[in-house]
Length: 232
Image 1 (cartoon, rainbow, N blue to C red):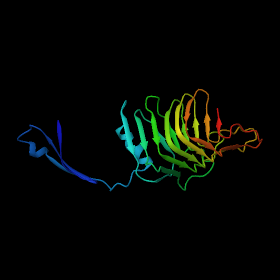
Image 2 (tube, rainbow, N blue to C red):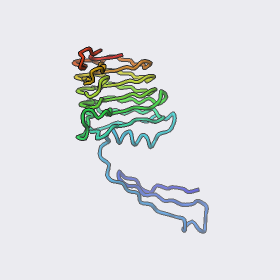
Image 3 (cartoon, rainbow, N blue to C red):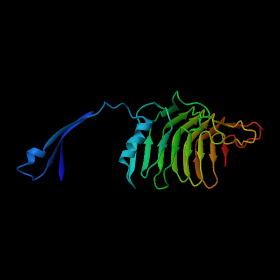
């Protein structure tokens, strides 16, 4: 067996020895001294937080991360999956999450897509998700998600659930979440638009406590939309 002995650890590097125990007189031959370094890490972003948690991922494990910045940008969709229960928390003043310059309305991609399982809850708190041009958060079939003390605002680009779309068998818990100025729309003559803030598919389960729905809307060509805030 190989044995590792850490000599020194700092923010951006650590030194450790690798050797075979009780292998004399050849221990000097297999002895290696390693100097491992990495680029100096900046404050944790939303994407890096989930990437790091995937490396720690193990079934029935609980992983928590605190984000210490006030703004993070997603240049392409963030996919969240895995078998561990994860929790990502921002500071009390909340972290603003918005799309980068490459996003365009009509791309058809949500800013965040969650595809975990009911045994691996994804929990987030203290965030402001804003200006998602292709919808903000998508909960795929069977996913589990909890959002607390957060705001979703000014999201557009899809016909149902511009803030949150919940697909069948997904379970969502919303605590003190504000939905503001989200708009669902479609340009198709026969298209159905509704749930500017929240679209709940048949078979999904959504719990809402506290929070606020204000100035959410929906529009289509025929003018017969359903549920400016919620479509179920």
